[in-house]
Amino acid sequence: MGQKMPLFSSKYTNKVDKKGRVSVPAPFRSTLPDDDQSISVLPSLVSKAIEGFDYSYLMQISERLDNYDMMTVPGQPSNPAAKILSRSMTISFDSDGRIVLPQEFMKHAGISDRAVFVGLGKTFQIWSPEEYQAAMAQDDEELM
Amino acid sequence: MGQKMPLFSSKYTNKVDKKGRVSVPAPFRSTLPDDDQSISVLPSLVSKAIEGFDYSYLMQISERLDNYDMMTVPGQPSNPAAKILSRSMTISFDSDGRIVLPQEFMKHAGISDRAVFVGLGKTFQIWSPEEYQAAMAQDDEELM
DNA sequence: CAATCTATCATGGAATAACATGGTATTCGA
DNA sequence: TCGAATACCATGTTATTCCATGATAGATTG
Image 1 (cartoon, rainbow over the protein chains, first blue to last red):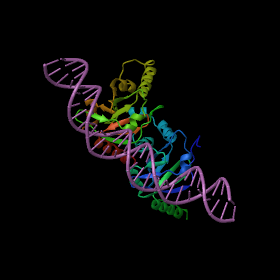
Image 2 (cartoon, rainbow over the protein chains, first blue to last red):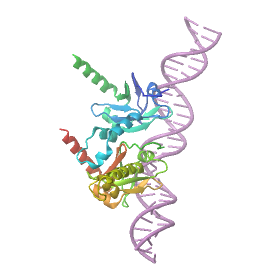
Image 3 (cartoon, rainbow over the protein chains, first blue to last red):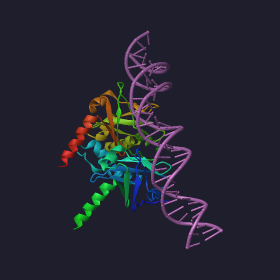
Image 4 (cartoon, rainbow over the protein chains, first blue to last red):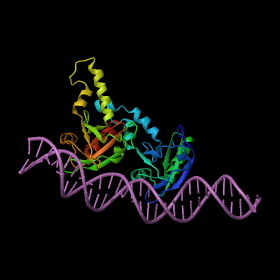
């Protein structure tokens, strides 16, 4: 099972029930450290999707943020690291490998009953099938 | 539960009763060391909010002050670390995970009946919903 | 090679526990 | 003894855990 840095790849579409529960794709789960059965998520700052990563990734962001400066030097809010930390949420999955997506996040991504998990290496994204397809079409268009 | 360095993230809005009691969000509590059921707070030096962190972070501030004192005259309020230490207060929460916010701090932050806990990694902030929204709007404006 | 078996995974619902919040009792100091 | 602060208890709500079922893919065996 997962020992070192997680590596998320491929694409999976799973169902979301009325409580907001979704199965995290098994390959995503098995790439996580055995002792950390959780992921961190946040509404993407740039797209209509949910960003996801493991706990160690969030720690790296925390290390980047100089809290002492935040507390003592005026006029430096809007720090990207601060935005990520304040918006992200760490959620653990149950014994069946499911998580519950926060309502607010689902709304941001336009997710209702289906969710697409897209592996991006150290991170992954969660889309609604429709929005994902639209975003991909947009991409292809820009290539021409 | 919490073993390593605390990592505060996400955002929670809780109610403040007439006695000034507020529930510290459970995820914040569980990130604290099991043997330390308390937090340290102080009115922010730079914004209309309350700064919060755990005991180990307060110790780091103290070390900062020690290093500073060796090179300068002690007791001068010019050092931010001195200000932080003298203004901060360590408060423990009850068996239900609630704290009592000092009146003076609530006044500084403009908090009356609701409080927003904002995770920033090693530290967190407590805002009034209105002030927080205003501060965030200010942030976005500065980006343009 | 085909049929079945088995293990893993996704899904649904119900029971259970945790949480936030309000109120009451008790302690401590003035 | 009185008031204020603190600890304790009770309740509704929400979230999490647990159990049961259906589906799928790979392995096994006749």
